[in-house]
Length: 123
Length: 108
Figure 1 (cartoon, rainbow over the protein chains, first blue to last red):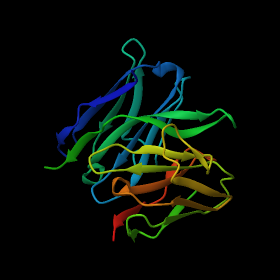
Figure 2: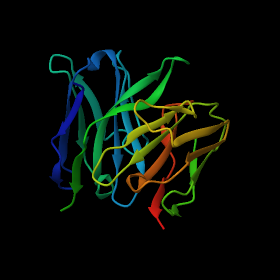
Figure 3: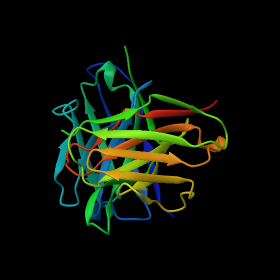
Figure 4: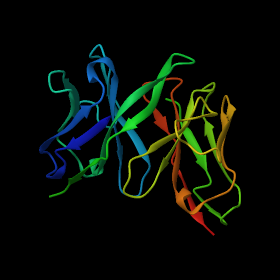
């Protein structure tokens, strides 16, 4: 069975740090593009970061230089390290697999999602 | 960055009636457009990809159309379980992957 299970969310002070984890079963993360997407209260979905199968990473401008995505192949887990979070980073964070449209060989659709982990940035 | 704009913000539809949601891209995304449904307390679920292909186990009442910059998601006969937020997302030119602001579908 395919599962993505996030953990590590909670209350963090502005300027602190927090690490989210996404433990995956049912497929190999190192063979996939994996991503973090968030939804802030009262707002829509926002893509945060991606890690490619070759380890290349990209970030949304809103988190660049503050967040780091990584993966542990031995644990089949991806992470999002949040440094110096701000109040506007308060959101439910989802890990998701970036799927491939096999008819066009174009990737970029989110075909599998975790249940989400709530992060609240507040003093 | 490709900016995605959805309309309306909220759509009120009677049960059994048709719901039509719109999505516009700031530049052509070809047919590389997906739709997601998100119910309260749940993660998003992929409904449609490649603008018009239903994902696995998605009911036939959901259909997508369009290409280039204009796209539509249609729910042919609204059911109570379809009450949710709906998001479009382009994957033609990324990173960044970009979503529309969402449309809330409610029962009239």
